[in-house]
Amino acid sequence: MSPAGRLPLRFSTQTLLLQLGVVLLVVLLSGAVHAWLTFERLGREAENQALTLARTVASDPSVRANVQAISRQAGTPPPAELKAGPLMAVAEGARASTGALFVVITDEAGMRLAHPDADRLGERVSTDPSEALAGREVTTRNTGTLGPSAGAKVPVFAPGSGSGSVSGSGSGTVVGEVSVGYSTESIGQSLARDIVPIVLTAAGSLAAGVLASFLLRRRLQRLTLGLEPEEIGALVHDQVAVLEGVDEGVVGISADGRISVFNAAAQRLLGQPDLSGQLWQDAPVPARLKALTLPDAREGEAVELVAGERVLVASARKALHRREDLGWVVMLRDRTELQHLTRQLDAVGTMSTALRAQRHEFANQLHTIAGFMSIGQHQQARNYLERIAATGPLKFPVDQAELLQDPYLQAFIGAKGVEADERGVSLRIGPETLVRGQVTEPQDVTTVLGNLIDNAVNAAVAGTAAERWVELELLDDEGGGTLHVVVADSGDGLPDGGNPEAVFAEGFTTAGGSVLQGQGRAGGQGLGLALARQLARRRGGDVTVLEPGNAGGPGAVFMAMLPGTTTARKD
Image 1 (cartoon, rainbow, N blue to C red):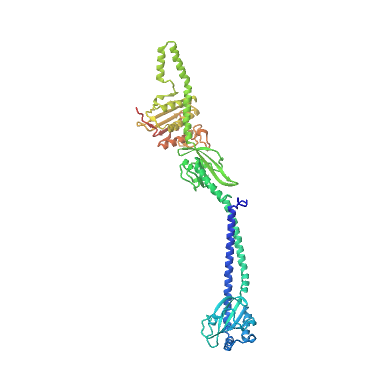
Image 2: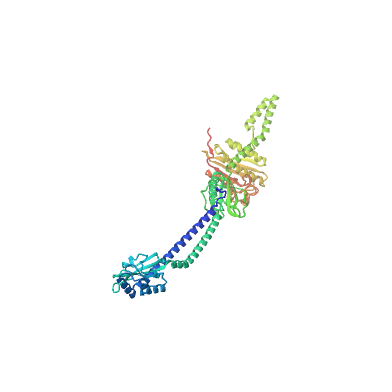
């Protein structure tokens, strides 16, 4: 607050007052300059008029003769004689007919021979007559005995000598001079008449300036949403701090459909450069993301989508300021790591469940051995232990699991076999399976393989075949490095023969075979195949459909190729 305890004026008010002050100053200066130029013009016109009248009087033959006659006399005639003389009559006649302030005639010494004030006849003029007495015409603005005036002085030449040209360069004997003046008060009166249009023009300009200032103030308030410059500056700092300091992607779409905000996190998550200024509908972003801002979209609904190699959760909300529509704000959150962790936790949880389920079998085997030992049947106990050693103390319900030499794949597929068995589906490994190397990228393998197995199990459960099964074949290349996966099931295949590429669209799910139109599913259902393909392609591989399957079984066959996920085993 100000020292007086009052709130300072708003910037828009200060701007308005400044504009009004500038307009007023410009109008006043323009009016003053116009008035001064008008006054000068009227003064020059008065001087020219005085010069013309003075030339006329000075060139009158009778004036020249009478002035010469008086100049030859010794001394100046008395005022009474001058007042009744012919020079007084000529001068007063010219003054009366032209409205001049004075018409004065002097001799060669500057003594008045004719003057409007008879009491001043015979006296020397109050202004310097030397220029005119030297034979030169001059215009003057000065103050004499009759007041301020604009006039002219013209020499009077003796008869028979140079008569004095208009230019004042005549040669001859100067016997006197004629001085004519017009009152500047009459000039002021003329200016007063001419100033009315000036005042009206200035008032109109001031009114137009005031109106323009008010309109500019309103537009400024509308463009800045009523915020002051300090508030706008603070908002810019806050915006930069918030937008660049959060991990979530933020995309702002203005009311005219252009991208106004595209922060660094959004660039990273969508794999795009800064798209600010581009039309939102033409931006190279997923179509499901654009669909969030359509007029019929449900505001605030979160959907999952795949962008590049990332799984994102996106939501959009309308941005409003009071009643003004500012556009949309789209928020992006990365769920890629969460998806990977979820897959890993699912695998761990599945394996833990399998271990708990077979704990009782392990306990029973120990009880059996203990029973043989307690009754002295040592040979039978030994034979029983040999059978356990041959088959393993714990057995997953997966046929031909011994074809997998990698312990990670054995454990993961075994756990998936337990999970499938609980749903009434038999998970088996095909006879062409042969994995000799070790898995070096378990996270990517878990994501791709887990998605394919889960989809196959879901299809088998939803299928109409009497026997429900999923068959899995895995093969690594001779030198290690690339893992080939083929997954088949007993389901009813892709819907209506299926478009092989449609199943990789975001939202497609083998549970019912429908494409989810803009619906986000818990756990990322509808994103598995799309994510699996993205991960495989990122490594230079792919996930494709080998067979779309048939109604009644067998179902669809998927193939995945994952380069750089295995390495040759070191013996």
